[in-house]
Length: 605
Ligand code: OXD
Ligand code: MN
Image (cartoon, rainbow, N blue to C red):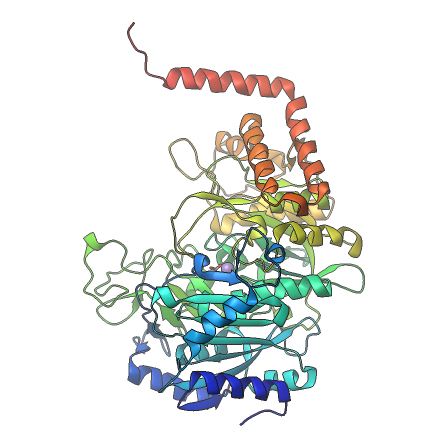
């Protein structure tokens, strides 16, 4: 097979000349093709078959131990001007970047098959969808891309019609981290990734295309490419609101998108449209419409069980590829949070307790979205779904209350821009450190954050029916480091308040940072939680918030002149609100001084 598209054909010929594969395979996406690839991977050890009886058609892939997460320090945005990439990205000039990686690609596929994967991000007949072609020498990447995207012949036909696609070149190379680069060329709509077989670095449709390149494309074309889940919330009366929510990697987007309502909230239903990426366009009525560009999930496994997320657990019992999980004696996949005992760890060694977790903290499942019991039929709708609310959130032990609503769109954009979260195992580096992660896009925005925020603000006039913007934090802890909120299915109580606010049904308490629920407005039926915990969850500590506002101000300053003045004005308004709440501020200062005094050991003089 080949193609009628001249520029695609020319590019593939060029790549083949440079990388020297032993053969070229154009992927059709058929079942037979997939079966043959799986058989090859089983024969080569690239996949290990799991217990067919308990986990039909499930496989385990073990990646190289040095290749288990995204590598932000080796990820570059290569634009002609450094300013365009912004201080939020590693930058290299396109000439230098091409020179560097092209040298590494020279002969890189010798003795290997080169796979050509045409794919479509979004429903194949959606005007909001965009296409790409990934060339790779990894059969593991092909079988994953088949689950994660609409891949094969129908995508190739669309590419031939449109004659516009993102070019993604990938080789696992020799997996040496010193020869690993993930390069993005947004001006050329192209990606070059070498030296890693890990999902976010190798499945180019996901972070590289659907976020870094697409965010650039979206600015040019007047839409938004975001790191957000999309869910539908159906009330017992049968009304459905769609919510898009941005949380950093491994902060529970998959769990929230597939939420199982608590028994004490009968009649509520949750529908999943997407769990990681959301493309937002302005619809005909001036509303924001969302599509999920992906067709599958590449989710974090540890912690997934029947209690935390029954839908996710059921979804991955068959036809799933696991990466870096442990095994039980009868070859079932195992990870922390499951019953049973592992016997082999994620690297294939006999498991010993003292060696730490048996599954890697960033071990993953890859599965088709169609296996999700709460999959929304509208996930396939070309026109997407209308969004009523946007949520921003992170993992914060302190400061951020369980939920607050922003004052207006501009304030909402500021809250997104000031988002912060504790880092997780999804990227290499230290875990648990608070870092600013605007709109959860720190690792994924393909251009300067200042310009990105300006683009967000422009929707204030582009879209007539804007969603309300909220901030949530499921992770607040008490002084003994215990979580104050139960999370998981109980988060529906917070979502219900959000929906009620969108419908204009509820008043709320106005604070300097936005609107906070009155406790009596939260649906707490069947939940055992003390009033004290609720007060702590909803508290806005003016002193802590003054520190937070100062930190956000310093962060914005890092982007210098590109930061929109409207965001600085909005921050100033929050600062003034905190300051004019003088009584409360004085009291908070007094309590803090007392606490400090009580905690300071007395010395004898
Ligand atoms: C992911 C991530 O894999 O954000 O979704 O790292
Ligand atoms: Mn993600």
